[in-house]
Length: 263
Length: 223
Image: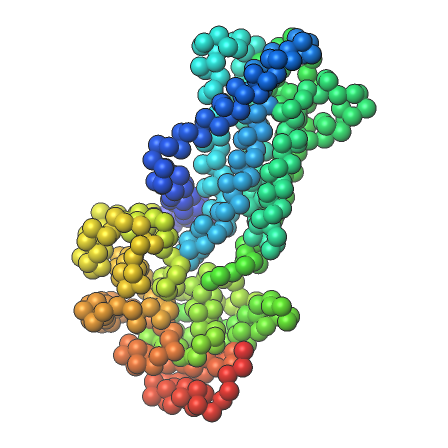
């Protein structure tokens, strides 16, 4: 039986994506060898430094375990920022690939984002040695941590498609991307607990979906030690909206072609 | 066959929209070899990129009924930071070609030797062209889109290249653009001239060359 148009396209899509993902892996590992594993070190150093700084002021933290606090906040902040920063160069880096008509804008975006999902997830493995050496208590609810992490990756995936297309759509898109990445330092809520905020402002902080995700991860880590405020469905709804915006922008970019064409 | 109907393309510039191609139409049967002549900035590369599906036209339609190569040009199609071998692997995956047989034929045809495993950005223009051709030959397209590139190969390569490309039994089509009519005369049966956004097709290459000369000599080129 002849294959339907849809099945044929699906096969082609799979082929292109797997080729692009392999190319991304070569780009990632080829230049630095296994040195890319050092990526993990950055969150580790940050967590240690911030943890030590906070230990000095431990008295002002009621009940909140400091290392867990830093780790949960920083992992998510780092993942989101890394997702965005790494996609800003995806169009310039892969311009030559658009000469193959099967390779579309959305394909290179998905390939890069997928690779970023894996590299950022490496930082989550920091939990294992820390738990092993007794630096942090065994998480209260590991499933909640994993669930929040999946939502973080979904968020990073769709937000990076938005950031990547913005770079292609506008001449000053790269700068917008850098600002978006910088904004995620506060937009992810790594530096505070919602419970610490005055009730008046807590509502504003909870506009950002990643504040919910951070709180969710902290709930998984602390359990009932410290109160957390979050809503799982809210993260899912906002991720759906972000994914839609990302895909719509990407479609626009595909039709229009990226600016700053140096073909 | 390939049919192009009322193709227009304009680009935004600082002085408003600039129309590069105005109403370009032609068709190409399987096995036909078309050369397109045009001076610098006439829109030759733009046209070939649109035919290859790299860019979208502003208006007009393109009907492609045979498989077409990517535009073989100085840039594009091959990634500088990857080695020649990795580029081949990537293209094999995309176009669904067996890598091992492709590698053998690319090594033989391009004669790059150990340079196959060096990053493409360290290649000379000629080496890059050889690699691009060798890879595109393994995919076996019906129609090849060639953008000026054949000028960079040395004589030995050009002979080999011509042998492969003009092989009668394969019945391949070629669309070649150049500002240099020597190449067009060598490879093509029909020729067209792209001048101020309009394409005029001639059955006789000689006539096209005459018109092209005319354009170059008498008409002032205005961008």
